[in-house]
Length: 322
Ligand SMILES: C[S@@+](CC[C@H](N)C(=O)[O-])C[C@H]1O[C@@H](n2cnc3c(N)ncnc32)[C@H](O)[C@@H]1O
Image (cartoon, rainbow, N blue to C red; front, side, top):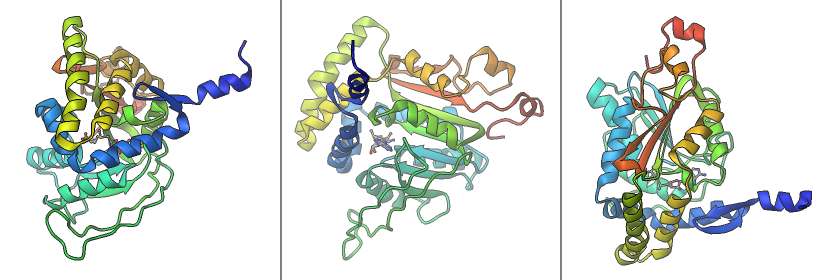
């Protein structure tokens, strides 16, 4: 029989791709991956997915349909891909220039890439966007901000950027929480979802876009072959970094199934769309086909959950993003 101490040791293990490592190591190792890929992140995303990640992100944002001056928190927001889409959607579809996005990421280099991208947009220097260093697993904690070495003169490739900040995210302060391709990199997925629940207002939406599992066996096999045989060599060829992309495909393989992840979202207290309970409360059908929506046969998946309104609010017609 295992002693309590041995069980505790066992509990402190986690995975970094296919490696079993000590929990305390994961954040640093994941940090190493994203520091290494930050400057080539967009190029590699396009190369690996043949540009399809753009369609997945568009679908994610279209389905969420942000509007009405809401407060969004894009966690693991990296290069600002989701944030810019949220803001563009609110502006172009609803003439909304009040909706606000905080882009939060644990990695300063990824946030710098995001700042560079947003600097090229109309949202730069407006109250609509904010960058913040933070850990998805502990949004109430402040992280030490690394000192920034700005260039002497601002150029398009090397602009002078404002310092990053790290502030706690208050409870019940967010209308829409998004996390895209970020959660599988976190050490404790359950803590990330619990933090999402804490920071969302009642009626708020949790939305996660992440790699899923392909359900058709033959296609799943072909996809696995592609992932393991093509992506790491492509990383080597295009950006001289095989290891980071080996981690990427292994971490996708290790991520829970669609049903397992949906269960984690429900266990954190969110109401899943498509359930009888959700319909009886008049919640909008964010994901029409149930608790998740598969994209490209499940290569990517969208999960949403609502921080359910109490029955009285629901009857009074108070709905998310009303
Ligand atoms: C694959 S990128 C996704 C970036 C962006 N959301 C997108 O869809 O293109 C994953 C991001 O998760 C961030 N990340 C990893 N662990 C994190 C954590 N514990 N808290 C916040 N961000 C984290 C990484 O720094 C990286 O920027």
